[in-house]
Length: 404
Image (cartoon, rainbow, N blue to C red; front, side):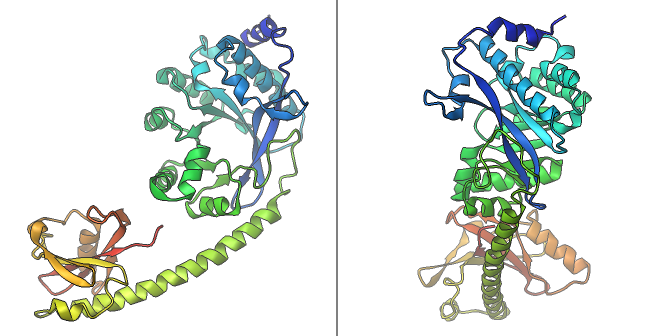
């Protein structure tokens, strides 16, 4: 008896015969080893000049019935799995499935991809299902994902960051892999809020054992950015477009090794510059600490290069975390007082209770730094430094931070 997906292919086999579809394969690289660890199967077709082009426009065409698109997709998927099964290749293959098409599944025990894997006798642990972003029934997707996992398949969310209920989908699916949307990745390379989002996602991935793949890596700088934010895997034309054949796993290893060396050289230079800046800040902190031991003169403090070194303000707290002084802000070459936050309590801030914890452990005279944050008043990326001034007072200093 023919399976549901085979019947569907037969039904549409004579529809638009000029739309010849076939799979190409784009390698995915492990940054640490430089090896090709897998391939993503992508649908391709010929244009009027006989050139191979992406079939993306075909599959996004609103004029073609969805049932027909699903049949074509399954045809390409079967071709890709067939080619994969005939190779002595030890990596994995990622295949795309539209979330909206999963809504058409009626029998979880007869999922087309699982039927294909059975027919071709493919090790299911080497297959990754990439669920593309689309409006869908989230409960249905979660049920299908559970069925895939019962059969040892891994699951990725593709084009993550392109829209829709992203975090809700992560919580429902608990993906093994997140593939960042290419547009989000390229915006993040330029900085701004997209950069913060990508770093946040990488922190999320480390805490949930979910791996990040950066797609669309086309330049050295984009590769360096992927390294800087902790990405484990990359994919893009910097190394290889999608092609008809698989390459040896070490085909691009020397290229990646060379890029890693360039990144290390650039990063070391930047870190040394940051250390020099840190030394200047520490020297200024000591000047400020000594001045605050007794009555201090703001005009005398202004003679030191606080502003040029990125010092924004300082204030004093008691041992309970209550702010007992004005904010002493520095701008335009002058200090000025802002009393608005006197009485505010900062004991819940990590830099405050970390300092007290270190003192309890007999580690005195420590300078504790907060994580990077965006300052509400100046919209600058900042850090807060905190240190013991005397037995009753704690000094906090807000400084401009280097981007992470």
